Length: 113
Image 1: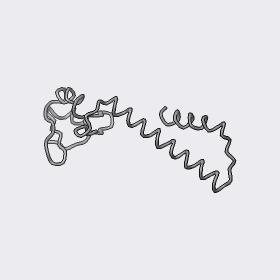
Image 2: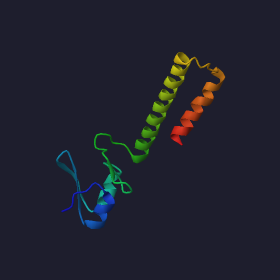
Image 3: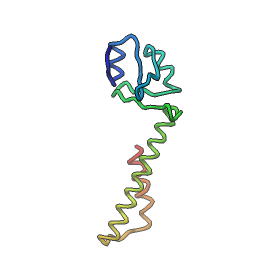
Image 4: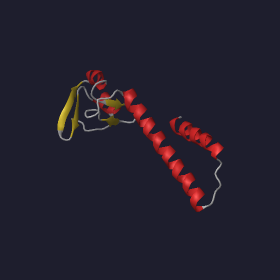
């Protein structure tokens, strides 16, 4: 028996894999059969061993990643807005409204890229 979070290690050393969540077995089988389930239940990133739980969020990997990128872009735009607003309010930085769309595009592309 081997306990690991690194799926590449489990693939190399084990014939059968049991995935547990909160003390309960949620999936069991060889890696090939678990990969077939991964499109519906969970996603395994073999390169860095991250297990993304998809039991409560029935999303595909593409939907999950699109949501993650959208959240990061939204957060970056919010941070840039607060930073520019505070620079104007506290430091007296003069804002050029014509350049704000360029700032927005730069933040979005820099974050999503």
